[in-house]
Image 1 (cartoon, one colour):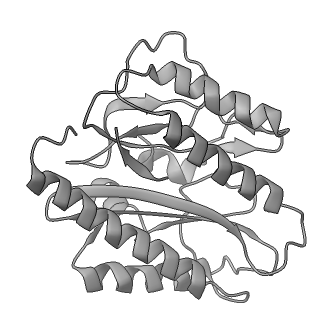
Image 2 (cartoon, one colour; image 1 turned 180 degrees about the vertical axis):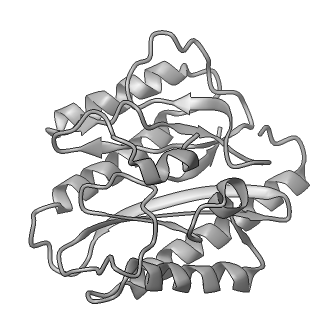
Amino acid sequence: MSITKESELHGMQQVSDVVACTLRAMRSHARPGMSTKELDDFGARMLKGFGANSAPFKTYKFPGWTCISVGNEFCHGIPSKTRILKEGDLINIDVSAELNGFWSDNGASFILGRDKNGHQKLVNASREILQKTIDNIHSGVRISDIGHFIETEAKRRGFRVIKNLTGHGIGRSLHEAPSEIANFRDRFNLARFKKNSVVAIETFISTHSSFAVVLPSLIRYHSKVEILV
């Protein structure tokens, strides 16, 4: 969406604060031996307490209030009673919500407890690249140039980008224009970031893969920080 008045900015700030608070609380609440369903239930209570709705459920009837992915799952993992968290797991939590007609999308990856499998370097790289990317986005910048920047930074650190998962616009719905903010230079995308628009930047990087495979159970749900450009 494009922010045109103070009330819209306030609405986006409110829902973004809710999403950020829920995400931080879920990360702190995660423990080895806990199921991803238990962690999702905790997130559900947080969102309900704020009066917010789960964006994936509201949009796609997703079977969970949040998306929780573990190990080599890139994103959109379905919370499960049988998926038990373990020490050293690489976990990604994606919290997106709607509040008073405004939508927000955020996510974070972290290591549960001790970094037994050596994934902290990947997590750190993703955070650093995300921050650098945000610092380089402003009105008029080509979206493809930002994609090139993300891929260049990932390669410099010895990682790859996932080419079939992208960021997107957001605001009055979960996914808006620009519909694809790729993590590589998409030469066919001639669009530029627009002033006062809201976008969700998602730096999908990996150790070996360049493409994500969508499991049959997730196909129907397919179509993490927001910034005001």
